[in-house]
Length: 308
Image 1 (tube, rainbow, N blue to C red):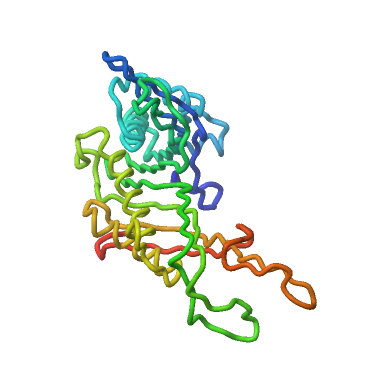
Image 2 (cartoon, rainbow, N blue to C red; image 1 turned 60 degrees about the vertical axis):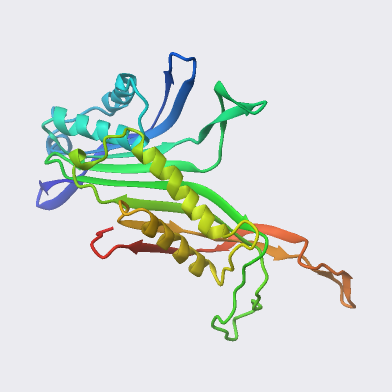
């Protein structure tokens, strides 16, 4: 963060532009269209203390300029590229063009537009909105030091069996019964760090990180569900989270660490009773969905050399 001393105080500052929405469409000669929709956040760390202390704005990059830069740079991308590569491109622009800027932090959230299929054939220019979102964060300093991470927002997963919760601490405040049969539902937020330390060290494929995102999402989902017929038993959300994180690090050597947030979204078995007896006997087949309150489980798994 841009820092210095003002009037005997330590002062830290940054400024930027958030939620800059941009859509880029690429058209191939065969008539096939490709598109992305990004929400871009820009934060610049710069030497502009006089703006705070002396009403001198001469070292400020206007946030409106940042917004316009997003559109210009999107236009300059004549070929498809990942959100990660676009974030790196923006960070390079701000740290190289402006001598006042010491570092740039670029965050992008990509909406999940998916190509539609009509009569079993992929449409050349038709898209529908999916569910979970692809995220990335790039921090690039003027010296060229790079920090790069990607993630997923809103990956909703549910299985109707093969889940339980037993052997937990019981005391006078405990009312939850133990069970080996329950529904398990969560909405995964994931963030993983890449080990690349400079722009020159990242893969040249402009869609490398898009492909990696799709592959990580598949590994997380497949590990949660297990075999398509037999499934896999979950002793707790904690256990399942660890198996998911471990599967990602085992599968992808270019990921140095992964953080998972997995709320336990409850589906409570319905039982209706009066003072005499049960009005209806349910057999774990009717549930009350509720997400408030919910359990909150979060953990990070890192390789020993990772600094996440």
